[in-house]
Length: 180
Image (cartoon, rainbow, N blue to C red):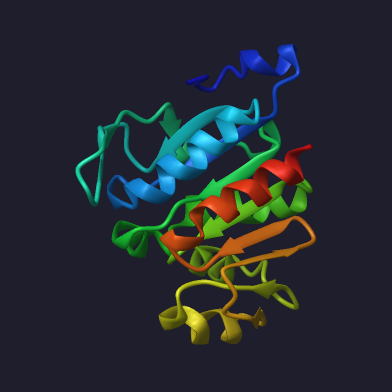
């Protein structure tokens, strides 16, 4: 993990910030996307709302590299929000919303899977954007001005969203392809 220093940028590696909840993040989504991006040569930094060890829904324990409140989208080529039931607590968190807005403003790849696209909706960055998420969150995205498709993965400009853990591999592949 690269922490906040981004030493790999000097080596030409793409920098990816993966954002997880401190409790109940989706382990499978995280591992699948992280592994695909790492194999594609990206340097991964993990951010969470606390510096405590984060706990996944299936028991994965991860020590974040930095706090979401201390992130700067400008330091990364992509910002990826991972789902899981714990992300609900951060749908309206000001640091999460700011990070999503800054990623769009700085023309970075912005990605979210499962329940995490609600963060993008609440940040106001999905107006007119084709998007997907869990079906249960369709109305939240539509109310935010998104065009909800319900497909496994949607990519519209620099915003990539995925429906559920079953789409994690395609989601990771789309992010890796967008980084090229």
